[in-house]
Image (tube, helix red, strand yellow):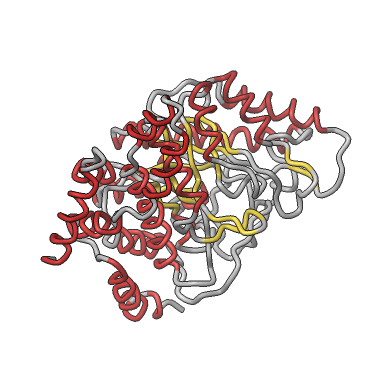
Length: 416
C-alpha cells in the first residue's frame, strides 16, 4: 500500500500541472454505477425453463463448467463479483429470471410477486435493479413478436411487455431509484422481405399501446439491432426506427456496442442523442465480426465512448450496463474483467485535460490539440487506478485472478 501511495502522489502532481484533480476523478468514478447483467452467470438460461434452447438470434458459445443453476447461485456469483470491483453498482435482470417457485408461469402472467425476492435480495446487498422484457426463447417467439400481424401472438407480447413495465415501476418505487426497463425484440427476416413498412407500422402501434400507461419510477428504453442470427436480411426494430420513435416520443434509445456495423462509431452517436432524447442507455460489449458478445476490454471503442460521455458532461444522462455472455471462460472472471475495463476507460476519460484541449481548439491551435491528446495517452493513469482500487478495498492489479480461482475451486467447480 505504501508504494501505491507514493506512486499515486507522483501521478497526482503530474496531473495537477495540467489542471486535473485526481482525487476528484476518483470520487466521480466511485459514483458511476454499472448495471451488471445477470445472464452472464448462466448463459441466458433463466428460471422459466433452464433446459430450454436459446432462440431469437441469441447464442451463448462455450461450455465452461460451473454455471449458475438456480437463483441462489446467481445471487452468490453476483455478490462475489461485487467484492472484486469498486463502487456501488446495479443488477440488470430479464423477465425469465423471476422467482417462479418451480411452477411454469407464462410470460403474459408474470407480476411483481415473481420478483419480490429479487428486490429483497438487492436491498440486503446494496444493489439497485434494472429490468428487461424477454421476447426470445418461447414457443410464441418465432421470427415476429410485437410486429407480428397475428393479433393473438402480438397481443401476447404486448401484455408481456406491459407487465414488465408495471414490474419495473414497482421495483423503482421500492428501491427509491428509477428502474431502467429495456425493450428489445429480435423481430426480423432471414431473407429478403417486401413488407418492411407494414411490420414497422405494426411495431409502432404495439409500442404506442405499451407506452400508453405513464409511470414515475421507471425509465423506458428501446434497443435497436443491426441483425441477428436467422434475421440477417431485415430487422424490424432498426436503429433508424427506434431513433425516430425515441425522439418523437421522448424515450431513451439504447446503444448496444455490438448492434451496429463494426466501422460505426457508437461514441459519435452520444452527442446527437443527447440533443433529442431524454437520456441514453448503453449496453457495453465487444463485437468481433458481429454481435458476438465478447467480454468488454479496454479497447479504443470503449475508451472513445467513455471520453465522449465525459466531454459532453453527460454522466447524469447516460445509464451504463454490460451485455455479453461468454460461456467459454470463467463466468465470474468475465464479469470482473469487463466491469474493471469499463471503469478504466471512464477513469482515463475523467483524467483527460479537456479544458486545455478545448482552449486549443477554440483558438484554432490544432497542432497543440493533437499533441496533447497524444501525450495524454501516456499520462500515469494506472497509478490513479491502483489508488482507486486500494481506496475501495478491492484487489489491486491482477490480484483478483487468485480470488476468482479460489471461488472456482471452492464454489463453482462443485456445481454438477
